[in-house]
Structures are given as structure tokens and as C-alpha cells.
Image (cartoon, rainbow, N blue to C red; front, side, top):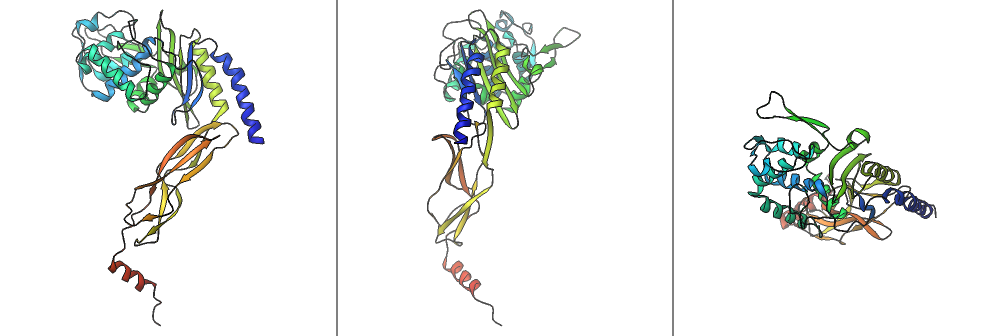
Length: 367
């Protein structure tokens, strides 16, 4: 009864406070990064323009297909891109890493085109790469027609899809480092000083634990924000699209998320789960261990159930690290996390020779 009352209370908190937090945004979502569990949402599957939050995918595709030390040359196409810029001159050369800082901190549209042409050979082909990568992540309502997010036909995503993209991008340590940087400098050709880049995401300076991710604005898309923060081993990722009070709403969403949810771990990586019988092996059983932490977010003051799926026994010939089963966390019947269970050691099949040795080993020593 205590658990039920706590869950009902937290649900009421979300319905009251969450509705206020999400009232101003056209679309919004908050997820937990490790499992992808949705903590709350509003119109999260509605296709909308996303302005410069497009650049989260631009950076991800570039990092996955290029080298940070690559030399990227700004073409005439990059030089002429309107909107926010790092003021590349035609023919100017920077490393891919420097271009990425210009892309994600200063939101340089010129850097986006330079990166797209370098990685994809052309902007059009790079956009096809972006869309294909989104599809591979499970995004069902995302099409990229530009690498920067300036208004154009058939360029849209959803808050849900954008959270999937951000979740994948934040697994990349270089991406994570770039988007959590508040201020950086990169070379500036024909100048006696470097370009100074200031991150447009003010959450980095106002919200404890903030780690990015990207702002965006056009008249058509409104104010868009992909954001993330970590606290007590739990990372939350949020998206608001067409949101006038973007930083205020992001702050409120994060505050409520951290207040109402907790990360629980019921098994740690390498922890022994049980001994599983082995038939006709050199030993009678094998230790089953967790291949990773079994952890997930749950409402505060509630506790998930741990379900262990294993066979009754294993045939001999088990290899160390072999997947033999699965552990799942369930909450109200919903599976919220799952990890494989593995054999902790090898158990070869018994041979005549090994059987004789086992028999001899079991005999009492002569006195």
C-alpha cells in the first residue's frame, strides 16, 4: 500500500507540475539516457521543424565518419551560407575538430556546410547519410534536407526522434566534451587573434550538472532546445520544440525529473547471480554473472522487480562469457531494463581421462 500511495503521489505531482512545465512548448519530452525510458512527454511524435538542433546529427555523422585531425576546407557554398556563422572565408582550412566546435558552440551554418561537403562529398549526400542514420536509430518521422536547419522543404523531426539522436550522440565522448564546453577558441585565418566561440546554451552556466546539448531558432521552428544534465549517476535528456521560454522550461523539466525519479541498481556488472547445473561437464555447475549493471529509473520511493530468465541446466561445453540467460527489471509489468547473463567460467565436456581424475580426487587419502 505504501508503494502504491507513493506512486500515485508522484503521478499527481507530474500531472500538476508537468502540465505547467510543458504548457508553453509545442512538443516536449524527457527521457533517462541509459535506458531511454520516457519520463514524460507532450506531442512527442508530432513532426516539426527543428532549426539548429539539426546540428546534433550533423556532428554525430561527422564524428562517426571522419577523423578529428582531418583538414576541412570551406568552399564557396560554405562561405555564402546565411544566418549564424563563424565567418569562414572561401578556401579557409580548419581541422574537423575545430569545425565541430564552431558548429556546436557558435552554431555556425557555414561550418555545417563545410563539414557536410567534407564528409559526404556534397550537402545532398551528407543529408542522405543523416536521414539514414536517424532511421537506424529508430527515428520514424525524421528527414534531413540540410546540415544546419535553416528553413527548407521536407526537413523535420519529432521531440521523440531528436531525443534518440541526442542519446546516441552523448555516448560519444568527443561529442559530449564539445557540447559541454562553454567557451573555446579556434584559429582565424588572416587575423592576429583566434575566433572566440561562446556556447549559446545558457544552461551550462545556470543549471548544476548540465552537459549540453544544442539550441536552435528560426521563425518557422521557434525556439528549440536539446538539453541534458546528470546528477547522482542518472542522466536526463530533454527536448522542447517551438518553446518561447526554452531555458525556463528545460530547467523545470529537469528539476521535476530529478525530484521524481531515481536510478536503482539491482545487479552490478560481474555480480554472481546463481550457480547453474551443467550436465556431463568437468564440473557440476557454472557461475552465472551479470554482463552489465541492471539499472533503471523508477519513481522515487518505488522499487522495480528483478526477473531472472535462465534454463534449468546447461550442456557441457560452456565457454567463459557465453550468454546463458537474461535479467530484466520490470515496473508494473513493463520491462524497463534488460541485460544478458553470462557464464563466469568455461566448463568443458567431461572426457574419460577427466572423469578418472575426478574419481581419484574424491578418494580418501591412505593413512
